[in-house]
Length: 626
Image (cartoon, rainbow, N blue to C red; front, side, top):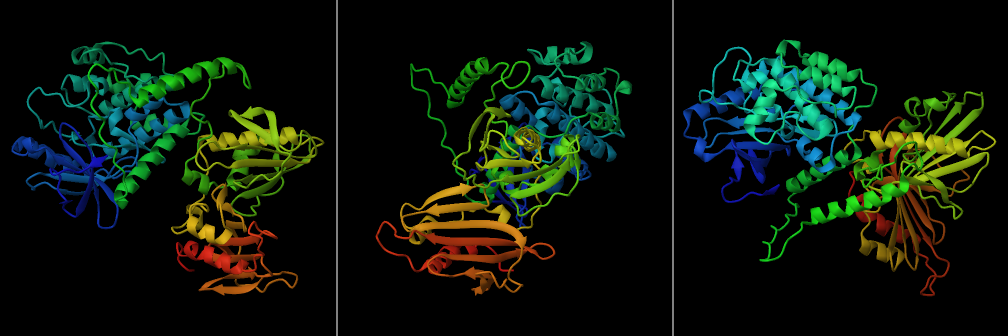
């Protein structure tokens, strides 16, 4: 997106214009914000079209048609002004890349991605056709990808199925030649089957990288659509059968959207985007949030090339470098760790966004759908917090197994070292080579760097079990990480290291105030006076129960925040309730200052609690009191 310029209004109706999304043959698309904070995409038609009565009639038809489409796989209309000097239409803003963009940048979709795309397109067509409309311009650039699935946009040339009223000049063809149906290319009356044909062409493009009808010229492309049987041999099965059925020249033989949906749902794979697409979606979401908050950074325009010098873009150089690395590394890894030819991955296979890293549902990773092949369950998952979970199982030989998974916790053992093998290209580490109690862990390579640690016991040598269970967990994380649902204002939406101000840290621990993150839930800061630890937890609340007689904690009210404090001597720890969740549990903050016996200044620290309270003050200000 780019800043709006003097051509763009400050307001359109009740929407404040923030930026320019892009422009096309019909008009200019602007990013707007509603009074309630929602972002919208506002399409304002080009000035040279506003004097055309035919075009205004077509635009009015678009508004009426689009307002009837409200499904979850489309972008609904939220406002319009047809009678304005420059008519405009506002629809829900979808923060996500187009299918065209991700295929151009990342290549063809994986089978899991193709399944999600097929389901989404079928659901969108069901909603559109339910209202009596035909989209007529289903193409990759009109399919936006979100973490929930694809969204079909731009009903600017949708028309009612019933009737045959022409809204354009006689003989004009509306649509994109490489994705239109034969009947559309011949300007014949359209039915819902026309959109199914276009969906088949879009699916073929997503599976191969190119439309099955693409040619060097528009006339040749239209000829291919009308008369040439497409070569779909590059489309992987079982999607090839679905695509071939959709691309039948006879509309009567094509599947309906309902049949298309049923065929996709029968496929034995999980419908999820590849991790690189989820990362791209996260980039769009961050960009939209930055424009809404007024903090977007606009890149300067590229400088013109110098005469006599050949310019190479950064993107091109990076692409060349990555291809070279992939070829070299790939040749070294062929056959390592898996049967067949292993392909070196430039993109990390376990690529989580920051938000995914913070909201991982640890216990869901120990569910039967993940670990079921290891045996039967003898106890339910039991979480000891938001970073840990354990489960009991019985393997096929009747052995009782115990598995404990932790994510984001610092692995403190100095004896942990690489074990010489990998899981999803991630080096496996562990403390023991073998033994009845064994752990194995890998570290994520994107999002918040953190260890994923699996501990197993129950066998004479539990290390192979720990590694096998860890591999199953990583496989689940890599394709569709299960996320916890949390309320607004939750501590789980906050990164522990990011809420600590450096100036406060310096006063608390002294130089150099170096941070050591442990996932998103915990952070250590060390300096020449000692160590400050901040940890976010969810556990049984401590502010409404008397302390144990053997406990060193006592009740405390810190400016309205209730909890417990251990204020013995220089070392001091606070545990405060931030947000009650369910039953007798709550989101908690644990903060502790642990001084060195004699710091580098040769002074003994005696004000540990004062330091903790000073460090907590700006952190607690970010949360609403319960």
